[in-house]
Image 1 (tube, rainbow, N blue to C red):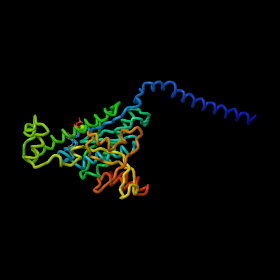
Image 2 (tube, rainbow, N blue to C red):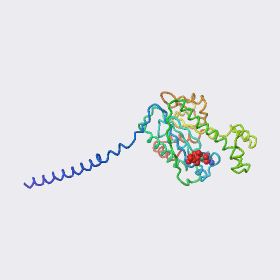
Image 3 (tube, rainbow, N blue to C red):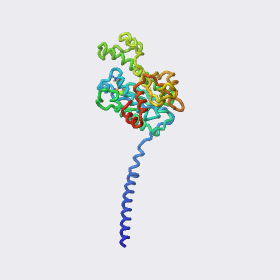
Length: 317
Ligand SMILES: Nc1nc2c(ncn2[C@@H]2O[C@H](COP(=O)(O)OP(=O)(O)OP(=O)(O)O)[C@@H](O)[C@H]2O)c(=O)[nH]1
Ligand SMILES: [Mg+2]
């Protein structure tokens, strides 16, 4: 009799708590779950090039506050490059990245299945990783402390054909040429001949590229074509098997290689044929001295033992 009473009590407690759990669950699942249906499917169509372009917000102010060199600050541009390297290391389906000024474009291979091709996921991961890496890498390149947190907008653009993709990248590289030639002439006039911003602007109004080239050469003895390629062409990042030894297989590691080539030319796409190939396999890059700091530090980090590599990752590029 005594045991039966205890058994009945236990059974009723178990049933009561099970009922409580069930009713809590059903509240969570059935009554409110419908709100999930408001989320929209934003999967990107198959078989298109996915380009994500990020751009710094109000970088005219950010560059002023941080005293960037005019018109090009090598170290500041390398903070952008280093952040983009991190993005490419994380997202291995990015086959090419292209950066200039405060913007970077990331090209995902057509067949990528990353994050089920969900547009918002791809865009927000790339933009937020770029932003956080920009902040993390800053002290490695810049001597002045960061005064406030920068932010970047981002957009997804889809290109159905290889030609569209090439035209997109050519458009961005032509933009560098136009802006950099103008800015170089503008800042020479302001900083070296003492013209005001307005006077320099008036002097350059209505001029063509040839006129600006001539002005730079005649007045400042500058051959524009001899200026650093990074300023004139922007930076192309490609994933490559990097050969550093004398023999082809001597030392070969995969890294993200910065290039400052003319991507408008057909030759670029021939040399780096893996980008548009049906089956993407990183090409080979023969690294010769002097190597860019961006690349040499990646290679050095790959040589270190694994734990050190993880630590280095936080510090380098
Ligand atoms: N001095 C200097 N300025 C730079 C450098 N790179 C980028 N900038 C600045 O960043 C600006 C980038 O241009 P935009 O993206 O069109 O302008 P923004 O001020 O960022 O404006 P939003 O993108 O519309 O927010 C340039 O106009 C420059 O003022 C650099 O190497 N040196
Ligand atoms: Mg901007």
